[in-house]
Length: 142
Image (cartoon, rainbow, N blue to C red):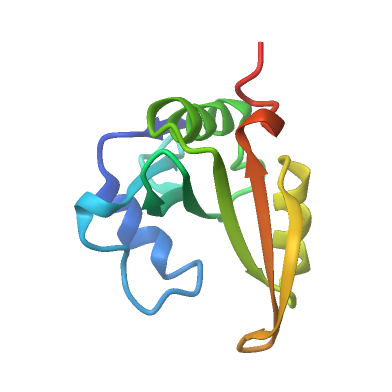
């Protein structure tokens, strides 16, 4: 049985930063939040982090998963309720290298829309900026 890890953001941070192309972990701890997904053996198989908060305006979202079906409705609901209801953000920003079509497709599938592309903004192509506004989020409605 998989379970959400909502009380160990440092552990999730250490697992996640290496998988999303960051040179170092999200820091300091007070400026980000993270949730992970453990498999039945207690191993992390996915993580989502939120940082770059502009209070009650926006934040950035970063995610990665290593197992099939790592992204559950429960995880998405938790993440978007945190961002839009607890942190009271109006918009979430996610940036993806244009070479990572799988991530772009996933991000759009969960409800983000492409806002712009920054030419040569990634080391291997353009930087795709995707956003989701609170009123567009199907995970917190109803």
